[in-house]
Length: 428
Image (cartoon, rainbow, N blue to C red; front, side):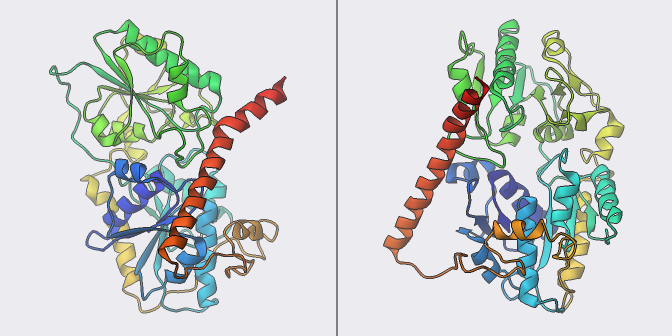
């Protein structure tokens, strides 16, 4: 299983367990700006038989049928496309033994639908997390004239937990699930944090938890330029005693949640699956840029003013059923079709050539750039600058790790400190 961030590690590893429950999972973390830290991996709480960092060239060297029966590509679309072309290059357009390739999305698909899907085309299985997504995915593939049989409906692999029951043994708990990049600007993020703090002041009998995704300096799937930890430290009056920042596994936080509040986080789907009252904030508008437009018709759209007055949104059951929150029958049955498709493909002695929609014939001005970002030439072969896997002494490994950590630190400093200052100067 190849992943390039903490959330994609979570989705990929849990997907692998859903579609192949008895398989041994090897975890490969793609080396890059969002490679998860040990703390992030521990917080996700998903274990693998082995776990190591690799470059794209290293992954392509080991990802053959003699090593793996199935490869889950849990990465951003461009990376998936590059890995598919790299794997295809190994067979040179011939039918043969190769791993079954599986990919998908880690949560709500509210932007770049066509771009992301076409970058994932060529995988043997493209998982859709709901009926709604499956219909949209097939429409995109059929719209460009390619086979849509690879699309398989399932559900998000990390839904679960005990159904919600109100407890009088603890305070009424409101959880604000933040997102790294939504909203993006400082003023909007300060506004949302201030409203969470004001809600706590208005309701001293309640506990308000601001659920954070990462610590300053860590990266997730999306870049976080304005961490809530730093905004909270500068908040006028600070946070009241019944409002605090928390980390931890989202499932454990939901175990004590009576109201989940977010702009558009996938945590909303986890909450709705359990039957927890869930509010999708409208304070900053219902806009595609925020992703909360995805929840139109859900019955969950609400503002902080309404929540302050005691509103507990009630989700529309038809919406939740179409959006993968409540599937017909047991939750585990949602993965039956995916398990069957993968098992059928694994049983074959040889698989057809990997044939992505994007080729040098269909996208000559786009594909080479996608491949070059991962050290591949236009044919999908590792270029001369690609980092191959080769033995290294303990000292050499330590030096490489130190250099990588320093580079990541410099990049994160640039994103979180330097870039915002440059933007502010440009606005003067």
